[in-house]
Length: 438
Image 1 (cartoon, rainbow, N blue to C red):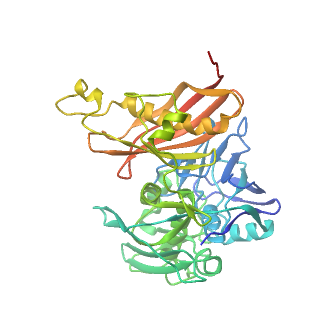
Image 2: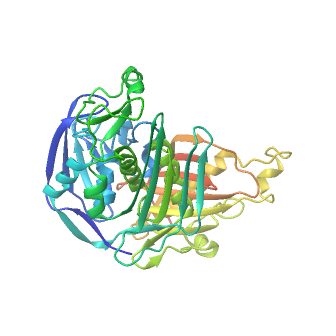
């Protein structure tokens, strides 16, 4: 199942008009080293802020995928290029942009495939992570009947690890498409499928400031009665394009997904929720080795200076180099703070959720700093959000990802999840201070 990571051999660029903003933007692909991921660079903004393509930087949206990175910079409509990354197996890229949105080109991913082909592919001396599904999982939304059903998959030799079945149903249009995803299938059957819109929704989209760059050539217009304004490339082009969008959003999971995914009427917002569930419940594998528990409570105590009652990380499930760590905090009724914090209806204090995330983030930075004589000390906390209460009996999954690590500062994006649902998130800034010994 494992394959080498890939990047592009050389620079390549393309210009075009963006679908929603209607402005001309240039996209330039450049090679990137192993484990760099896909990083967008806003060349049009002061300081050229970077926007990583990963789940921690997603801004929930309905009609396109938006990422937010350094200095609040955003990049919109990234899904078609990221679908190429998933479909063609491109893991590491620098993507320079001269605007806030990727161009629509012909409304599909076909011209982005051509762009990658011009740049060429190069294998890197590091294995790509896979994300395997260990047990079936379901996500559903009552209105309007949107759902995912995901099941484990052991692909036959020579087949891709991801199989997707999508059903599109809206107004007078119902289509289904099913694919086992590999590079050839992606090129021929998925990448050429264009974006689409119901004719009845066109005015509403323009009123929202969307679709300013849409044309009859790059957008399929669906008419009442089941017809289209112009001939389509495939009878089920809408369902195929939904598969394309899903593949782009699945890139944000951080590994090649090995599973069977059935989807019904889902869009970008639901895709983001699926990515969250996959990251929370799946198993990351590098090479042939699954990421099993890395540090138990004894080993954690050897690394972190905290002790009862302030040691809030029970286990570390995985550590990916110096970039990412996942830990567990089991919340019990015996926690000392429950004596005085809403004792009749115990809720874990939000400040302690932040502390738990900070401990995992500090532990991740300590791996990088262990030979430097420096220690991470929490300096500031940004973008703190609490999404749900954490109560006795919950198991909190802690995630920490290094955003930046310089000589005197470290920045870590952290999240706390319960049963796959986001409970809290924060961006933590550490001062890297010189260690002192008495």
